Image 1 (tube, rainbow, N blue to C red):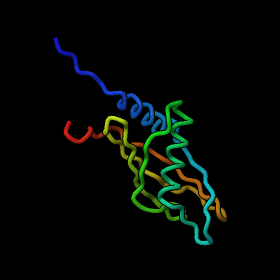
Image 2: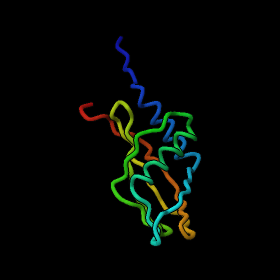
Image 3: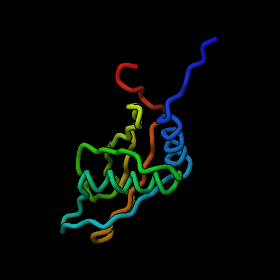
Image 4: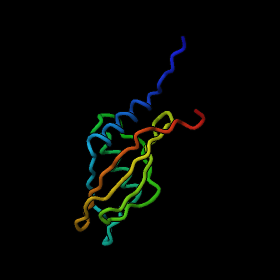
Length: 118
């Protein structure tokens, strides 16, 4: 009997999804401009750092296509990519902005997309 084998990336995505869905991950960061906006690189880094700390896993590869506006209710989408190429969408929503300090919640999609070609 042939048994399907899960790649190493899938358990990591499951752990990240559990964190983002169950723990209601919240991220706090300082914004470097007079008009609050966080660069897409900084948003991705904050998400990766938060998920790694909460799951005990290595820092995942997270990319965000655009900067996050520092306005309560502003949203964005990012992508977490596992080492096997599978990916998981991550929603970002700004919950507060005080001066140059922005807080946002993150929520991972419930299912991962398989690696290209699978």
